[in-house]
Length: 166
Image 1 (tube, one colour):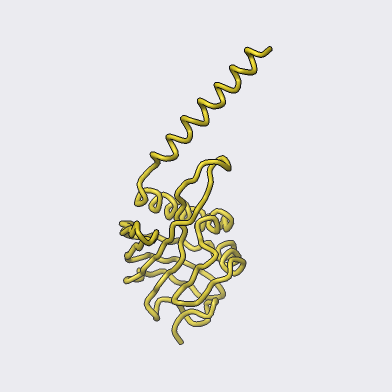
Image 2 (cartoon, rainbow, N blue to C red; image 1 turned 180 degrees about the vertical axis):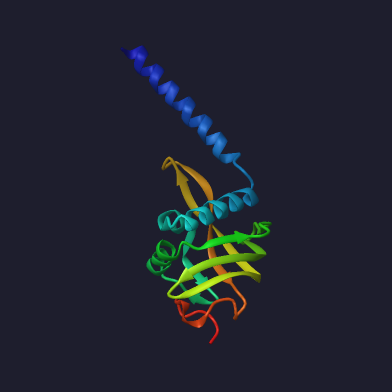
């Protein structure tokens, strides 16, 4: 009985050790940001707000306007926006734990009587590295979207969230 218990403990220690090493040698920050952004875009297209909200920081702002999580989730569920970021090349600032992606974004959305299907140039997506844990033990890097900057004429004024031009 003791040998079986010792064997289980040793096996568990090996599994946790291997997982810990794999977590510490994980993918690059650029790769993590690309994967998270692609997953969030796919989830928004499908209207899965919860999956998108996992990627969005509680501090999200769009053109300096704070977006409440519930408002963003409702918008994603109802509008199911199709977003294509043309160039996902994050520039990471390790010292500050931030990253920026600047790109043209194709936006297709139908919401509150507005139909938008256009390329929006000059979009800036800002990310912050936030602490997270895998298996409740191992610290992992998690990047979340904290700020989106769009040109003022990119969104109709009455689309919602107080954004857009008049």
